[in-house]
Length: 199
Image (cartoon, rainbow, N blue to C red; front, side, top):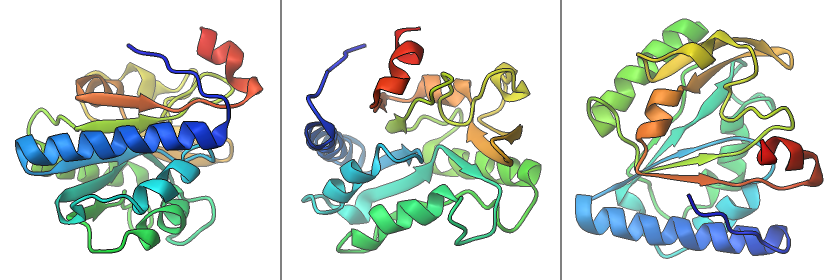
C-alpha cells in the first residue's frame, strides 16, 4: 500500500486523475478495456470532472458503481445522480459501458443479485475489477460497509443489500470483490476523517 498526502483538494484531484488515466491506458493496452468501480460522496467529484476531460479511449471504458442508496432514479440521494452530473455527462464520447445498480426498479436484495451477475458477465468469475475507487466515512465505513451491518460478514457473494444507514437502505460491493480488485484508489479528505483513517 502506498500513501500520498496532497496539500489541498485541487492537488488531490489532479493526482488521482493522473492515476486513473495511467491505469486506464495500461489496462486498455494489456487487456483491451478498463473496468472501473466508482463510489459516491463529495470527495471524488472534482477528480471525476478532470477525468472526463482526459485523453482516454472511452469506448473501452466500463463504469460500475461501488454502492448505491435505494431511492428512485434521478433522486438527489442517489450516487448515480451525482455521477452523471460530475462525470458521465461530461465524457466527450460514448463509454464502453455504464452499469448502474438497478435500485430504482427492484428490491435491494434483487438489485444486489442482479448486479452480482452483471459483475461476472463483465469481469469474470470470480469478478476482478481493474480499479475500485473508495472513500471513507467519519465512522470508518467504506463503500456502504458500515459498522455493525450484516454485509460486513459476507464472504461468498460480491454484492449485498445492507440494512438502513443514515435513513436509507443500500446496495454495496462486498469485501471479497474489493479485495480482488487489481487496484484500489482510496481518496480521503477532511479533518473529520483523521481518526478513522489512522485506525
